[in-house]
Length: 331
Image (cartoon, rainbow, N blue to C red):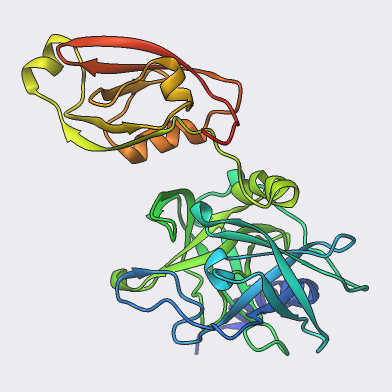
C-alpha cells in the first residue's frame, strides 16, 4: 500500500488553515432578512440574483465597521425595503436600517446599533490571481456559519446586474454559493474580504461571481454619506445603433455601432455642452463608444468636475464636444 502519511499531513494542514479562517471570520458574518411583509425572491431561470436558490427574503452580510455598526450585503437581498433584521452567529438579533443602495453593483449598506461587534478587514482584490485559494462564507439561518472553499477561476468578469447595467470587475470562483450565502464574504488565505457573494449563473453549471473588494471599498463611503453612489451622467436617452459603413470609414472610426441620442435632458451636462437629439455618440475619452455599456464604463471611470471630450456624428459631420460633468440634480 502506498504511504499516504505525507498526503494526509498536507491535507490536514490545509483543513486546519480553512477552519481557522472560518472560525476567525464567523463573528463578522451575519444573516440579513427583510423586516417587512414583502419578503420575496427573484425567480426565473438562467442568469439571476438569488437569495440562496430557493430561500426567500433573506441572505447574508458582513460587518465592516464595528464602531459605526456598518454591514455590507447584496442589494438584491434587501431591495424594496429599508427595514431589516440582522442575526449574529452568537444568537443575538437586532433591527437595522438599509442606509445605502447601489443596484448597479448589487451592493447595500446596513446600519445597526449593537455593541460587541467584530468587523472583518478588506484585502486587495487587485492582487488576486487565477488559481488562488478562497473561501465563501454565509450565515443563512442566523445561528451558524456555512462555508465552501475553492479557487479563483477568473477575474474581471462581467454580468448584467439587478439594475440592468453591466457589472464589471467581478471575481469568478469555484467556491459554491449555497442557499442564503448571497451578501456573504469571499475571503482570501489571510482571512480578508476580497469579494462579496453576489450571483450564480445557473445556466452555466453554477458559475459563482463576487463583487470585488476594490468596488466595495470605492462604493461604501458614498453609500454612508449620500445613501447612493453619485455617478456622473451626461443626461441623455439613447440606444445602440449601427453606423453607415461608408461614413464610419470616411471618419476613420474603427467601430460598427454608436449610441443614437433620442433625448437630451434639459439643463443637463449634455444639453449645456450642445449635444442634440439625433446625434450619434461614437467617442468619449478617446475610446470608441459602440453601445450604452461602453458609455457607462467611461462615465464610471470619470468624476464630477471632469471635462469629458466626446465625438458625435451630426448628419455627415464628426463633431467634437467638451462636456463638463457636474453633480447637479439635472445631470
